Length: 137
Image (tube, rainbow, N blue to C red; front, top):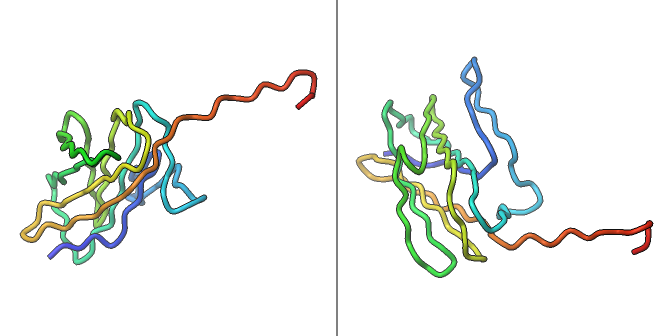
């Protein structure tokens, strides 16, 4: 039976030439990543315990909006998957996050007993830039 040991949302993840997992843009200032409203690109990485990874794995990724609406996004069109050893990388090249609030992403692995994990991201409007003139505040 597969178990997801840990998972994370980051800006980018990849396997280098030696097969090591490389993560970029991991949120360290809190437990929930913050994203601006609009079209977003991000990556979900999961480590699967108990040695269950096979070539051609296609995890199911679902999104729950702050309003509670479920949206299943399609593999190949809405996200791409890479696997290596016990790691699964799910690249989401473009996803519209139009409502402010907490989004929940659920990743389910296609196993005899599906392993699932829920991740959250807080989506908020960007604060307008403050313009300072002549050093005055």
